Structures are given as structure tokens and as C-alpha cells.
Image (cartoon, rainbow, N blue to C red; front, side, top):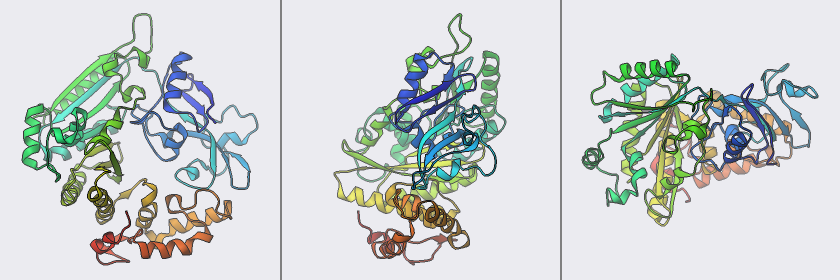
Amino acid sequence: MRKIIEVNDRYSYYTVEPGVTFFDIYRAIQEQKKNIWCSVPALGWGSIVGNALDRGWGYTPAGDHSNQICGIEVILADGTIVRTGMGALNNSVCWPLFRGGYGPTYESMFSQSNFGIVTKLSLWASPSPEGFMTCRVDIENEDDLGRMIDIFQDLLVHDTIQNHPLIGNLPRELVKRGRREKFYAGKDAIPDERLKEIQKELRIGFWSARFGLYGPKEIIEINYRRCQEAFDGVPGAKLTGTAVYPPEGKKYLSAEDVPPQFRSVETGTPSLMALKAVEYRGKDGGHVSFSPVLPPNGKSALDFYWDAKSLCKNYGFDYFSGLHLYSRHLTMINMIYFDRQSDVERRNANKLFIELVHLARQHGYSEYRAHIDYMDLVAEQYDFNRGSLRRLNEKIKDAVDPNGILSPGKQGIWPERYREKVQVESTTNGVGVGVVTNGVKDKIANVAVAVEALKV
């Protein structure tokens, strides 16, 4: 299942099987000399299909992968092969071109679900641009995050910026320069006073963001000026950009034309550089990703940031941010890095994650995906009408997979024969510690008691 079925640069899409990695598609594009830029996440070794189905993203203008899916082939639990959209026509030539087809559409039904096994998928991608500019903006003050988000949101919604900005804080910058112990030897969260000293030493902002501009030279230059004007009013803001254009004789820019130092994920170039981040607190490091979705509103994000940072500090962790900002939502990722050799850090990382889930729920937010250990917990937060969405998922599961053989429990969707057992274990083991609604827990009154009972 590692076949690249087609790379089409006339319509800018590729069709692949689930074993195809981001490195595979990048190499295929270069070998076939296609005028297309693939979209890759932080780590390039993963499955294109798996990433898109789990609502992962890349960093080109077509980086919201789940929204770029156009046609899938799926095998149901009884062995039936189904093609969605126009693929339901034998020998369809429009399968990767038009999502709708005829009647209901089902691509999203197989995202983050256990209803079938996807064996083929087409993904729309970005055409090779006529130019690319890699950009970075640094903001000096920690409490100017809100202004930064509001400025970016306006630039995004008006198409000045075509891809999504990635906003990181100072601890996120440290990992690019070595382990945490190089800057702070304590086991507690890095004190604010020390963070300010580090910021001065490195001469960078407390917040920094990177993004790309794409298109012909005249478009890139005017959009860069608009970005400059937007950030001019922020004290201490610094915007830089480096543009790259096709070599003489070429109309479009290949990712390989970009100098290596600027050939980042914004050019669709896969790498494994992000792996070094897991060593932030120790050579044998691990991490848990907390990924709530917020509105792209500066005040909302800043309010939640202060609360989440305080909670992280209580458990001895730095708030390690990677904020992925789109025109209509913000995924406010907090990477909880821990030393796997430390029992204390492993337990505290687990407790912190669970408390962050409940903190987000108090603010009206929740995660958009979760590690397998926390899928039930996150599913419980989606509590409208006593969890009617979860009950609908269970009805579909029982209809298409009555024996419950495909990934039982994924995203909290359990087949009927497991449900009673899961509910009992959820209560006794503390795995599902209840839903927070307006700050009040339904099942367990004291979060601290619940998390102490957790098995690590």
C-alpha cells in the first residue's frame, strides 16, 4: 500500500495509498519535475493519508490537509469497497476534482473514526509559485500576544498571507539552540525573570512567528509592505523577509530552487528536525501534545494562555507553545515535554494534561484530536444534548461494523459489546474523569482527587 497513483500539476493534486510518506511524495514530485508543492507537517516520515484523516496540517497555502481531501476509497468491516464522491462512477475522471458527487458526501465520516480502512486518497495541493518569501516577525512583550493574533487574523482573512502563521514563545525558541539545561538548570518552570534574561541574551522577541508569502514578485512585495504596515504599531516588533524567485529560464519556483537555509516546511520540504525537541528536558524525552481549538481572537487567546501557563508552572513545566493561526480558528498547541527517566515528570505530565483538558472546557474549548490514552476523556467533553454526537457515532459504528473489529475505542467510539465495560473502567480507573460544564464537574467534584487515581 505504498503506491503513488498520480501526481497531477495541471489541477494540483496527488492520489496516494496509505503507506506513502511525505518524503515519498516530495521525491516523486522532484523526479517527475511536476510544478506542484506538496504540503508536509513538522515530521516528514508519516503517512499522507493518516495525517489528512487525523486532521493534521502542513505549512503551504494548501496546508489544512483534511479540507483538501477530494475522494477516498475505503474498505468497510464486511469487506465492501466504497469510493466517495465522483469516484462512485466506474472509471470516473472527476474523482479527485469534485468533492460533491451525488447525494451525501462521506469523506469526513472516515476522518478520526473507526468506520472503515481508507486505501486510497486524493489531496489537493498548492501549485508551484512564481516566487516565495520566508518571513519572521518577533514581538518583544509577552502580553502583546493578543495584538499579534489580531493583526495576523486580519491579514489572513484578507488574503495578504496565504499560509497559516506558526507562533511560538521563548521556550520554543530555546529547543532550537540546545537542551533546556543549557539555559536553566532547575527542575521547575523557568522563572519569568530568567526568561527575560535569556530573551536579551538571544536578542529575539518573547513571541515569534514564521509564515510565507507566495506569488510573482509584485504580489509578494505589496503583501510584505502590508505586513510591515500592520506590525508598525506594535512596540518592539521586528519583521524580516527573504524572497526567492525562479532561476532564469523558469517560470515557476521548485522547492529545490530555494537555498537550503530557507527550504523549510513552508516550501513543502519534509524533514525530521523537529525530533530534537523531545530532548528538551532530557536525552530520553517524551511529550504529550495538548491541542485545544480557540477562536482567532487575541483577548481570548491571551486569557487562556495566562491560565494555562499558570497551570503548567504548578506542575514544573514551561508553557511550550506552537500556535497555529487560521482566519477563523486558532489551534493553541502546548507541548508538554518530559524526561521519560523521571517518574515524577511522567506522572506530572499526565496530571497536567488532564487538568488542561478541564481548564479548556471551562473556557468553552476542547481538543481537536488526542493521544490514544486520552481519547475517551476528550470525547466526554463534547457534551451537547447529553453527548448526542457520541451516540450518533456509536449508531454508525454499530451499523457499519456490528462486530466492532475496526479500532474499537478510537476517538472514544466504542462498539456496543465494549461499551458497558469501558464505562465501568472509566469510572474506577479515573481514565474518564468527567465533563466540565461552566466550571462544574458532572462526575467527580474534585479534579485533584481524580487525577491522583490515574494510572501512569
